[in-house]
Image (cartoon, rainbow, N blue to C red):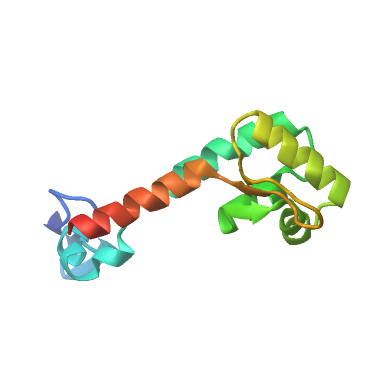
Amino acid sequence: MVSLTVYDGANGIGGNKIYLEEKENGVFLDFGKNFGKYGSFYEEFLKSRDTRGIHDLMYPRVPEITRSQYSIQAIDVLFSSPIISSSDFAIKSKIPSRTAQRIVQRLKREGILRLLREGTGSRSPVYLFPELLDITEREDTRKDIR
């Protein structure tokens, strides 16, 4: 006779421990971590992934706005540096300078980037990626509440 025993994970997320047995032979089909139990010890590693949602939204949106072969590089730079000068944007993304300027202007026009500081003389304008900064501020607020 075959038996199936669920040791953990039936009433939560993660932590499945399912044992399948026939005669005297058995195997665990899954042996995951119970996030409810681990959360009390490793909470900092089990944070929500709010930034992932914005990242996923940007993947179709930025290429549509920029119409550029460099759109994925642009997204990656914005997530690594949500406050960035236009010259640093070109350098970090390895996008040709004139193309980088055009991308930044299109992202600004569509509200993805916001001008933080005007460029003056030899200083490049500085832009911010407000959607990402809003999330990091919310996460900081959550830490303050605890």
